[in-house]
Image: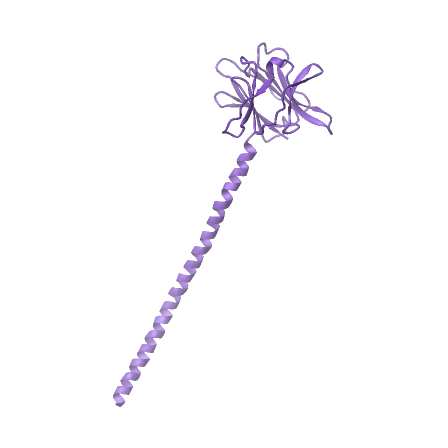
Length: 228
């Protein structure tokens, strides 16, 4: 019986030692596993935040680069974001005009030719801010411009106008386009009109660079205009 007690005591102590030893070995493994699971949770959270935030940043940047106002060639057309960004043609003191209701001054300008090259780039700088854009749409292009986009009025009462002295070049509202950023358009009633010459002036009335002209296969395709 004594022998059995001793043996059982040895077995109990051995079992206890094995249990303790297994616990000591398992403890760091469990701890490491918990840390791994915790670190996985921590690394997943920022990824979810980036997925939510990134498109918003891209969307904001994209909106800033989209001009609200565009004059395109072919049949000369004004394309705008809002339906009422350009008023109907009116005459005053013998001169015709369209009032641009989206903004009171020119902010940025880009002139693009048919191969996609930007020949005049005043985006992101003040060179064209508060200036004018003179546009010729019929020959000859040596005289006065057929239309001029400029700010008129005093500092306290300003508006941006597209002066069109010749009623043959007034712009008629067309059906809205269901796609694109500038869904509303007005087309020139002179079907032979096209962008032949463009001159961008600064706020002091001086030409920033020599005028851009349509020559041969190189044609002026679009004038992109940001307003403020």
